[in-house]
Image (cartoon, rainbow, N blue to C red; front, side):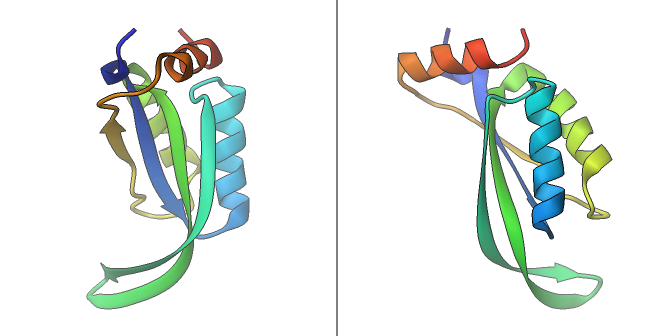
Length: 107
């Protein structure tokens, strides 16, 4: 079991309800071991304008091999026309945490 087999996937969404729907679905399907959510202020280009908004940032811990499935679920449930879905591989992690991740998600 190597840290490089695991990742953090992030997305942002516009409402607590959408964040909760994404979180619940991914956890129920055991595609992720954990989802953390944070309120954030975002500023970005959209449709030719600079836009600022409050969003919910989700950080999801899972296996890299599940990225495509997680991405498909997020795209299906997401309220945005173009959601941000990023995967960041883990470079290192403590063994106990990796074992917990492995036990918490689908094989």
